Length: 77
View 1 (tube, rainbow, N blue to C red):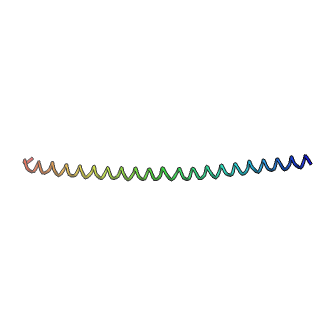
View 2 (cartoon, one colour):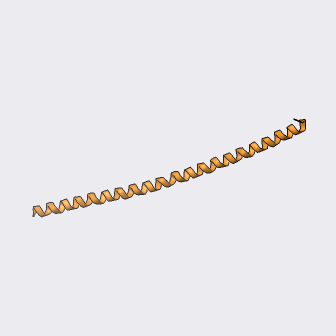
View 3 (spheres, helix red, strand yellow):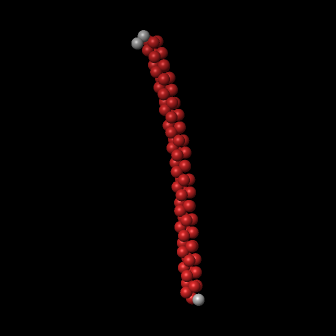
């Protein structure tokens, strides 16, 4: 009787260990997938902002060039 109880107890403990390992693996995979998507979104957002700043800079540069050209034309340079 004690031997049967020991076998059942070992089986229950082994089952609990396997279930906990499976739960940890699933949780970790979910966290990795979730954490990977966030940096991608942040990188895209940073890239968009960087592109907007670059375009604004080019626009300001073009406006400065036009202004300088007008001054040169005005004074015959």
